[in-house]
Image 1 (cartoon, helix red, strand yellow):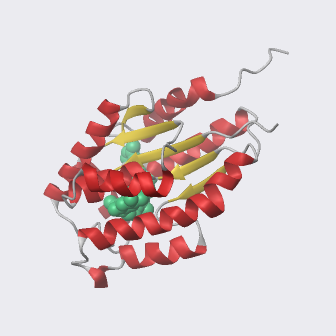
Image 2: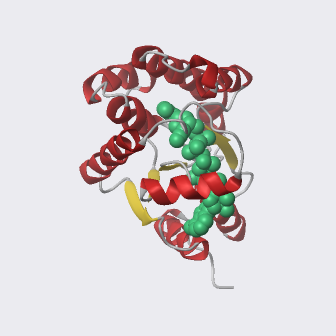
Length: 215
Ligand code: Z5A
């Protein structure tokens, strides 16, 4: 029987350096001989999910209710799980996702103030007890993340238009989740330079990799 693949998620505020971290993970998995790891993202990961992502990020929908936002990310997630994540894991592939349900606890539960309980109801409905094998939380000071994103020079999406209290609440919600599940989470100081963040990311996954023979 094929051994199920590993499910890794990367979380953090905007500008935390998730993209950089994902590149380091890709290189690490290749060096470890992990075949055909699947890199994906949320919201998104399927044609339907990417369409919902476009709507969620579109500034024309500023003022969207927190409830509509939470339900939309979970609609995208249900499709992502059914079409991409579960099938890939079942064939033994590793799946690495740029964000997953911890982001909903952070942004909709914390940032929008919906609270954990209503997110937990949706989580239970959409994926029951299925959780990532490991979650890397890139913890960054919101002002540091914001200035990195600003220097990138692209236009602001609907989340990037939010102000400090929103991001501080999201950061605090992430920290609570990491504290509650220390076996799953690894916290990475993402205020550090990129090569140091990459080094921390590799260290955070090392124990999941298969031992390689010395020959
Ligand atoms: N969202 C939600 O509300 N609920 C949910 O359930 C889910 C998502 C799943 C889109 O996510 C939005 O969806 C997100 C939350 C919401 N919005 N916010 N905020 P996203 O992940 O696609 O969007 P993002 O967080 O805005 O991505 P980002 O801005 O691209 O962040 P990043 O990937 O962490 O950053 P990066 O691209 O790696 O780096 C940004 C820049 O900083 C770049 O120029 C780098 O070269 C530079 N950088 C990166 N690391 C460093 C270090 N260490 N030092 C110096 N400079 C650095």
